[in-house]
Length: 305
Length: 287
Ligand SMILES: Nc1ncnc2c1ncn2[C@@H]1O[C@H](COP(=O)(O)OP(=O)(O)OP(=O)(O)O)[C@@H](O)[C@H]1O
Ligand SMILES: [Mg+2]
Image (cartoon, rainbow over the protein chains, first blue to last red):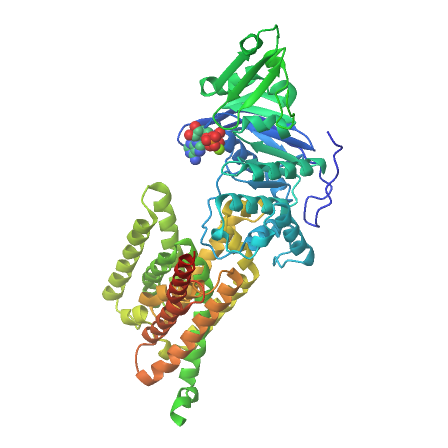
């Protein structure tokens, strides 16, 4: 991927830090007795978008919480940018966009106030915003196309708009590592495309993003790495070699619908190519070609066959 | 005219008005946060929970603030403990703990009658406040205001989104402890002005009124503090003429302001809502 630029954030920020994420043998058990994660292990470097896929309850959100230190692993360790979780949080190395924002939508804060909260790690003791902080807030809102809503109270937005505001807050944080838990649920296709474009830009500037999603079809579109999860890491690595129908079937088991249409079913002349469609009822992933499942999946951007 | 400035001619009235205003201001600052979290009842609970501490402190001839503060913190701890160990909901826990403390206070005061009557604790006695008590109240208020002014932005993040607070390196747990300590301390101060029964109004009404008037937290705090300080000052002033309980006057003033905001607030008021509705339906009528 691109070379790994060193971050030159604010004085207290993540200066001189290169994005990286290492999850080693992480095991998380909830007090209820559920072991949500077992020996999860993978490594990611700078300039990466990594897709995190797995069925409902496979432990995706739990993995995010473990990376952020909201749940303490009973075993294993997480290191972010080479630092321990607490150090990384202190130095603003991680931004997190949760699956569902559990906030009080009637809170008397405006959209721009929420995005400004992303800047707190860069501010002094009294948290008085500087011109640079204000500039970053405007820029972040602009990038998610929410600038004209900046003076709205946060509860006055639609679900997708709220999501974009929290994305803007993560941008304003200027963290080298960004964790996004299902950023595309409840978001229309246009917004999804815009978010993906944004993630690509961030990748080009050396950020590391871990994105959980059920839209299997868009994974090959924008992820260069994938982690397949089902209580433990089933497979991880570059999308081309890891995001295969075999691995997907292992990760999703019977949950996944799979259609395979051989060449012979489509037309009379001999053709070894076939179409394989895998879906968990969000956007399906389609494989097409001679080798069948060994082929790279179709990208939405590949027009025609 | 001569009549109207009369309260300013008496030392005890001046003291009462300024101490009330100060306490009103700090309580109002706290109220901006409390009512947003659905923790309003915490103010009531702490107000009652400090009673045994005050009674005990007079009995042992300690500063009343110390006793009140200790029993307030014990009550808060008790609530946290019961909540953690059981599946009871917050309101039940609060009700359980504070009535226990209040009962203990009543019992203590009736078995060992002291110089301070239970009525003084429950209704407050700002007009008869002693100089030592004034100093205690001023210290509590000054320290609390300083901390709040320095840290209110962090508190907003913690109260709005605790998860995010962590990701920007804010220690949410420590800040919450600080907040509840301040709340306990200010409850003790408000005991002097309005008494245990009406403390809850001081830590809810100003914030609730301001909430109807603005969507920005900074302004909410300023409005709330102005309301709290103003009503407390004038409440004490008016009580001179009515010869009535200061606490009752202060809280009545706050309620009147709340009602005014409830009807007249530019965006969230009842009238504004009606106006919007009727203009929306008349727009709808045009094809
Ligand atoms: N707070 C909790 N207490 C107890 N068990 C939990 C808790 N949160 C999650 N679990 C359990 O842990 C497992 C993993 O949950 P998790 O939320 O990580 O799944 P997920 O992959 O994010 O699912 P989804 O796709 O639905 O978001 C589930 O079996 C769930 O029941
Ligand atoms: Mg989840």
